[in-house]
Length: 352
Image (tube, rainbow, N blue to C red):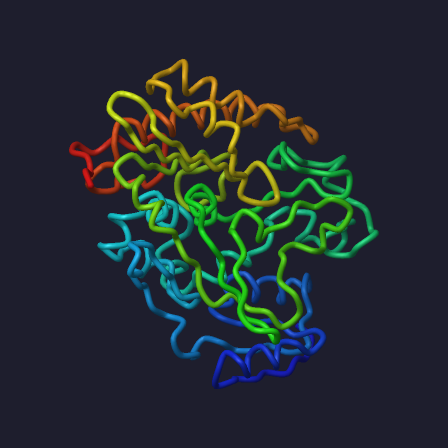
């Protein structure tokens, strides 16, 4: 590691001011940042420790029925909070599928949003990577890229975003609260992460010094609690990043789908919400035909970025399975293997 300054501000305002200096980075649990520093991938000149800041560790139910999650809430605390898991079960299932218990006990909500791609070429300083070194090129384009993007990629970058947590957040219309030198602003989660274009080094809408203070789920999202699942296909069931994942949520209106929410993971450099698939499901009777049409809509713009054409067909099947699970009803308890296609569906469903 390079030498760096370490500062421990006493308020959000002090943290924002300290992080506005060139080369600064926020430090919470550091489950991703410290690995990047040890590998020489990122070399911050100053670490701004925010782990102790007040008012960032609460899980709140808002007066309108929505939820507000402080940026320093631990992943494990959020996933196992009974009221939250009942209102937003796909979020809890995604969190429990995302890492080992040790990591979940350390990792934070804000840090999860900020984690960087696990592309092997990004992690290898000897490889060309436009994300790590703008203008260097992208060795993934002609390399081992079976796990890379099929949606939203460019000739500059074909990496994917690694988060599980962000996928149901995107589906459910989450809002990111951001604090900066010019005050507080709010950004939809679907707009928070950026597609690569010609500037893959610019990963989020955050400006220098800005920090995430909370994530908010609207009250409307709780209306999908009874028919909501997260499904994740990975190279191994135990704590691997998604090859393809899907968060599906339905609001049933008698025997038809009154409204649908669908987002994909492992297919792009951001959580990919498919409004086309949602529109294809609205007003339809749940079943194979409707789910297959939604899957086709979700991947209508997909194209391989190398050796990963299989991801398109796999992704369609994941969408169909996730929608079928959601239509069957949210289980009243999570399966022993959260989000796994191999997990038996527990008996009993959640009705709200």
